[in-house]
Length: 284
Ligand SMILES: Cc1cc2nc3c(=O)[nH]c(=O)nc-3n(C[C@H](O)[C@H](O)[C@H](O)COP(=O)(O)OP(=O)(O)OC[C@H]3O[C@@H](n4cnc5c(N)ncnc54)[C@H](O)[C@@H]3O)c2cc1C
Image 1 (cartoon, rainbow, N blue to C red):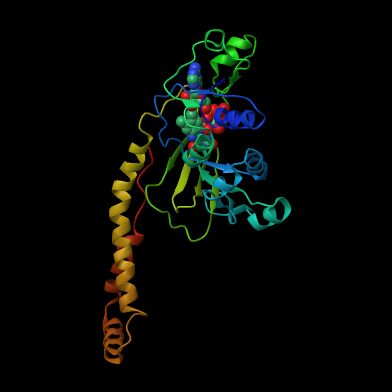
Image 2 (cartoon, rainbow, N blue to C red):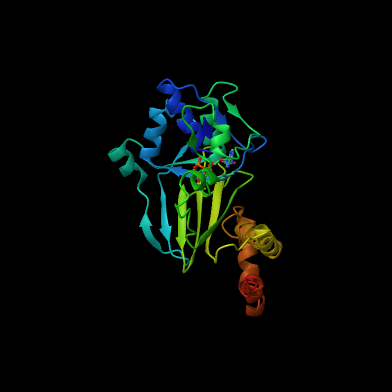
């Protein structure tokens, strides 16, 4: 019997079945939803999935990370990701996978009825009475660990809290598959997935127990200011392009040049000032 239907539980169950055990996974969540964000799998993880017989299925859902790296907040490169070198050395680069896809692949490798949801195991003694083996895969704050190893101190908060999300639509970053920005006590990064979407995550140094009830509200507030401005900058850039390199007709080119030559310098200055004279809103 495996307690916990997260990543470790179904993986353990697949392995046990491959060596002849009859296994049932019990998961307390009422149903499996597409929860979680993204996970980076290195070659060791991919090899482990190969050993479980799900390597092919997982390869269809991952995106290799070939480019990217770690940056400072002002955009200077601290280190570059060389996925091709990792691939030459290890047979695979790091790959990015949606946690939901990894979870689905593991679940689907188990026969119907072998993963039972809506079953919370209160104590191993009771639920595991008829089992020859109980695997406690009930996550970071495992209560089974506390029950079986009462002197174990349990998980200790590392001092960092991560906020993660997956974009709703494909994310067009022409440059990098993976990017991490390291600041002082904070970090921000993204991982791209096979369907073009991306996970972003913000790492914050925070005291234990701090809950961010609505972390997206702060981003929405900023976006409400930024989006209007972003559109206006994009419009101005398009107009400038149309009037600049975009003009091809000789008459139009001559007219533009004449107007620009005659325009008073104040008028020429007004245009860039509209966008350049701006200070970002204070982040709260
Ligand atoms: C919802 C969710 C989303 C996550 N998203 C990410 C992510 O985006 N990126 C990342 O890097 N990591 C993520 N993680 C963490 C990562 O999946 C795990 O830390 C890691 O895979 C270890 O897996 P695990 O099986 O030990 O634990 P988990 O994956 O945490 O699974 C433990 C499971 O045990 C179940 N459980 C707990 N107690 C009982 C009980 N008494 N009876 C029955 N079932 C019980 C839980 O409901 C859970 O499904 C997420 C974890 C969860 C639960």
